[in-house]
Length: 167
Image (cartoon, rainbow, N blue to C red; front, side, top):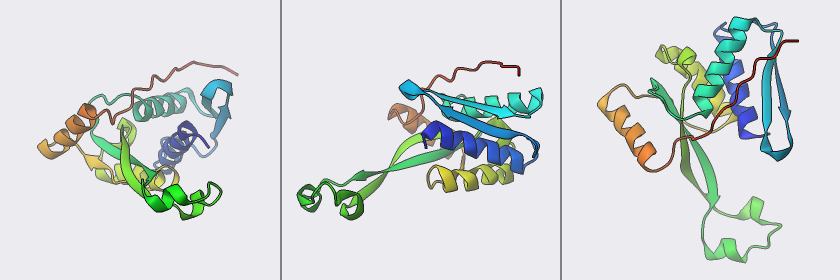
């Protein structure tokens, strides 16, 4: 599963849990050649589709004055003698890895209005994307976290293309 697919599922499940998207709508994901991913809602109202599209765009795109952010971590192989000596076939199971922050994403506006809404997003994020805690950034400490992430290129620069489709 691609990162875009996982994040789209997090957004969909979170919005559905807080009743911003009806239970009749279904998430459809098509992974395409060249790394493209098409994500859409089947059976959703135009308003639900708009909330979903905006929320995915906010999470995957560059930070634009978010209220809450959430980190995404990756586990990278540690540069150790043991890891270098392991046969390639055994590495996935035996090599030591270090967890490091890879990116800082915005919690979408629809899920960032209150702490309990951000917690819904955080729960789904932790299950499908990465461990991490949603952090309120409208205070000096939070603002510094965002500034540091931007300075260290730990924020998304993805451009999300959106198309309206009528079936």
